[in-house]
Length: 200
Image 1 (cartoon, rainbow, N blue to C red):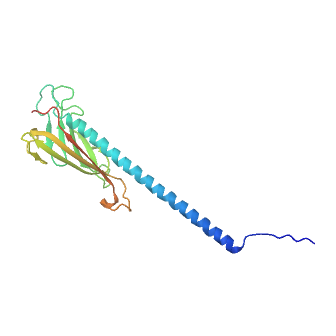
Image 2 (cartoon, rainbow, N blue to C red):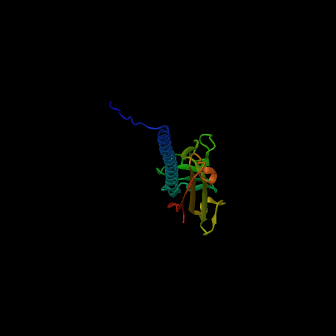
Image 3 (cartoon, rainbow, N blue to C red):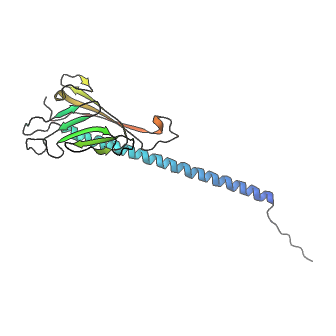
């Protein structure tokens, strides 16, 4: 009579294999979750930087044109200036006024969606603010005057010769693991603008 030996797994072997498999599965899951969070953070940082660059580029281009006045019409230049806002005018089409579109522009911060996040606004004369860049933490303007002094609140905007702009953007959502600024990463851009068309 022949006897065949049947080999199988013992209960202990199965428990060990199950434990090892669970550890591998848990580490794979943790790696996936970590990568997903890192991707979300990178995406927010990229969006924040792009927002800041777009806002700064538009401001610099238009402020540089302040005072463009081929017909020498009155009231063209920097009309109002403060530490967090600036209003500029220019006669782009040479019709001796600044009443046409994109000829009277104000930049300032405001809450475009009433969501508690401040945005950089661009306001044309007679219209309402339009968002240029979202989630802006701060806008700071420092002016150099004709006599060489600097101020954030010039009494006479016609004396402005140079503007230093600092724009700080922040991520749209807080990251609980980030220790500063309430969990929001920030990105600051600075630019010094010399309007070409102001009287010297």
